Amino acid sequence: MGNALIALMGMTLMGVAAAADREAPPAPDRCVVYKTVDGITLQLHVFEPSAAAANAPRPAIVFFFGGGWQNGSPKQFYPHCRHFAERGMVAMAAEYRIKNTHGTTPVECVKDGKSAVRWIRAHARELGVDPERIAAGGGSAGGHVAACTGIIAGFEEAGEDTAVSSVPDALVLFNPVYDTVNLERLAERFGAHVEALSPSHHVAPGAPPAIAFHGTGDATVPFAQAERFRDLMTGAGNTCKLIGFEGKPHGFFNYHKDPEACAETLRAADAFLVEQGFLGPREDAQ
Image (cartoon, rainbow, N blue to C red; front, side):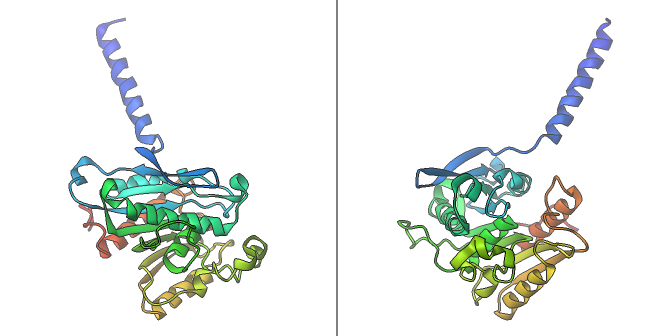
């Protein structure tokens, strides 16, 4: 075999490897324990921004996965974390207790969500994070968890330092459950806490600014819930931007389901965080 052919084959294989790297799913830079409760260790899967953003306190965002408070994985939000890390944020995907793994209820999900926000704020210095620019986001049940951290009072984990706030400074919500009372199938899952953990029933002035993405064809959480939540938020003097996606079903925002819709939600979330002072304008912004 001639040297030229060998060289050509080597270049071809390098190109295939590079393409595979580009298509490989993103992976966190590290994982840190934010909570240990009842013998269960919970971690944040951390995506670090580039060294260029390391000198100043950086904004942070933590995502909570969906799965009906019963199952799911932090990997759902790895693409979102990578995007925001590349924009200069410390981006994290949180583990939290779920029914199928830990035998827990939505109460524990919300407690863990609050613990995660509190831990990030309490450890802001070592994370290189601005404690006043911490956003919480999530999808479906995870969006409900994120919304609860910003809107629902109480449900703090016993023994934590409540002098450190568990309330995020902004919310990025992907077809969350806004109203647990008016989804009858949730009555058994939430039990006595069905109204206490319903974000739409507890909207008040001073809630964090929010952006929500919702498909008009969502058969799991009706689009009308999203519209009502927006109206309640703005009626209380809060910032709440709702972006509807015509005909899209529940979970449309996931990269593996609809890469184009995922990219569109990320662009809009990015612009929202620019508006809120979390990020500088994108270089490629029109």
